[in-house]
Length: 91
Ligand SMILES: [Zn+2]
Image (cartoon, rainbow, N blue to C red; front, side, top):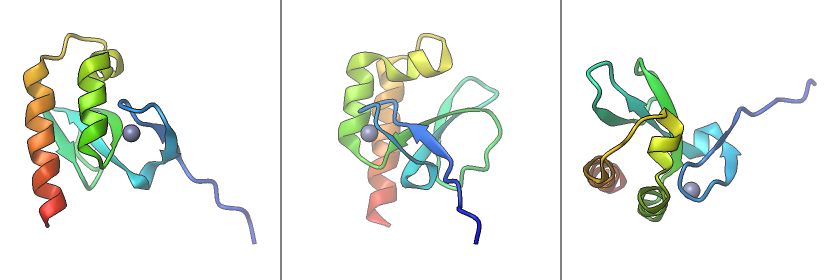
């Protein structure tokens, strides 16, 4: 049996490289807003983060999204994503 290669991605918060499916995708939508993309199927540029609000907090401090998307991302975006992540975790 052939060895399966897991696609790996780096978390923009803690910068740990993990299998893609253990991370959650953050997508930059064509209108310039950001959203979590739990299915990984939305169109747009993507970045990956752990399912952990702590990683969003780290990314906010280090400017992880700005680095990933090469544009200035407002702290409000992190807060919005943190809220979305909180809702996901409750499901
Ligand atoms: Zn992380």
